[in-house]
Image 1 (spheres, rainbow, N blue to C red):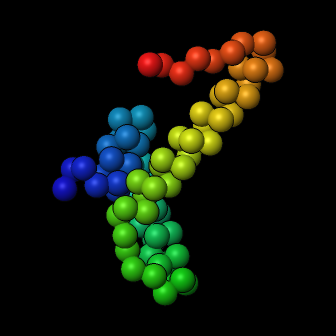
Image 2 (cartoon, rainbow, N blue to C red):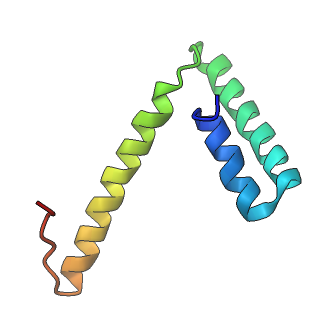
Length: 79
């Protein structure tokens, strides 16, 4: 299960901050997820994380494009 969102989150934090901080960050992340699931009467769905990631990437690309235009550059999509 190394390809799950929470596993990737743990390993990313572990590489930057160490194992102890990664465990605490993961525990907090799980508690926040549980809180929102209980609050919204929802079921855990791993696909929501992928959808959110794609949405964030789209917004990031729009922001980068706007910043490039402010600096006088035109971005050309890769073919």
